[in-house]
Amino acid sequence: MAERDAHSDVPVSGSSTGASPAPPPASLVPLSPRRHIPNMLTMLRVVLACGFFAVLSRWSIVDSPIMHSRDGGGSFSHLDWTLIGAAAIFLLAAVTDALDGYLARRWKVVSVFGRIMDPFADKLLVIGAFVFLAGPGFTYGVMAPAKTGALLEAGREQAMEIWYWSVSGVQPWMVALILGRELLVTSIRGVFEGRGVSFAASWSGKFKMILQCICVPGVLLLLNVPLPADGTATGWAWRAIQILVGLTVFVTAWSGMPYITRAIAEVRSARPEQS
Image 1 (tube, rainbow, N blue to C red):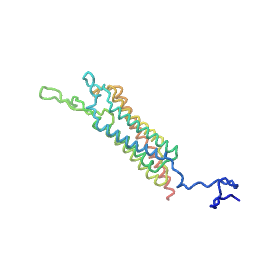
Image 2 (image 1 turned 30 degrees about the vertical axis):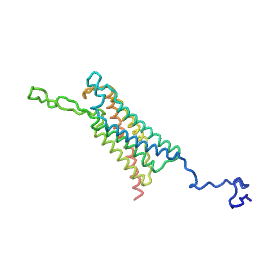
Image 3 (image 1 turned 90 degrees about the vertical axis):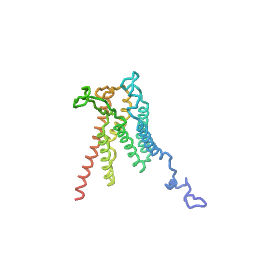
Image 4 (image 1 turned 90 degrees about the horizontal axis):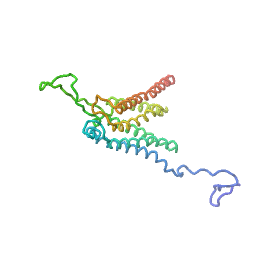
């Protein structure tokens, strides 16, 4: 007979039966403090995104030291530590994006809060960054001859007009495309995951996020490379900015296609079951 405690009917551990003791109730198991770390990293990314926006909201290309060369010319030759600091903040936020998901999966502490806030923090950081890059702070006006070639009556001088140049290479339509892609994919995932269909992030979506996290700080750092103030002239850094931004926008749009094709396939496969 199993040995019992004098004041209890529960068999004593290590009794002759050899049976292992029953595990304690789940409510009595101490929760590891590590479970909070991924969510804290996610919230840190939100704070860093707000700090990033605050830095860029007070910045303008017109007042930037990169607009004034040492010899008083119009080339971009001075380092702008505001842009460098903003790039550092963005990179730190991007690191938290990679780290919070990895730790949550490794420690098996994936939470509902994390599943909601992680994509929100990602979109807040990236879309907000592109909104600022396409904003007036990164727009520079250049005096150039009028396209009509009209001549002023006084002095018969050629008429001039202002050409606005986005030094970041990001145009408003690009921001609209990025935002549209994110809204569409979020809607698709929300509808199908609500039906119990897993719509986890695809490899194309992850590649898109990596490229976006390279593009934003890359543009901010490349702006510190000496560039001509004349929008018609091109330097290697300006060409690099155009290529980086164009590639990022293209990949962002392309990365939404797998979600669309999969959604169409799910709808088609569900029709025979309903009929």
